[in-house]
Length: 228
Image (cartoon, rainbow, N blue to C red):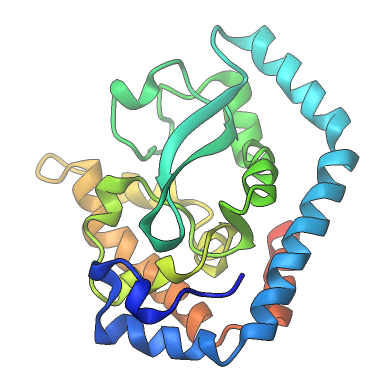
């Protein structure tokens, strides 16, 4: 998982704010290699071990509501590349066309099964496939849709130096993100406005802190904290 030369990064990432983090990762190449090796081995083993759970949840979803088992949405990962994330479907079909791209507490679009597996984060398990493909990592900034990435500041763009992650310090701190968004939403502020102006900047503080002190051991600790 070595990083491209700075001059080969997307132009919007070639700024001094990103360069600070770029230099940190350039000095930790061995740690990045360990990170990718762990991603490959662990995701492959978990795909095998969790296969019965995959089957159970897939059947549960199909019995609960009409629509596909998986939800595939375009997200942004390393270097601003677009990929399609794998998640178990937790909402009604075409939910993103019937409301905001982020959810709120008691969102009516969430299915009965969806509510249960979202609370336990089981809907994220299929992202093991994205990790195997190299589109994601176990630990890293959660992948956003392009609409929100376009709102990144120069410093926030540094999070695109690494693949997007399934979990992170920000994910742990904001595990009840929908409740936080609901608290801020009112007649004058839309859900998207609240997310971009209130939630995203706070999450990014944790993401950037992780990047500034990156090491492979910290990744393992974050994985353990996520499970706990």
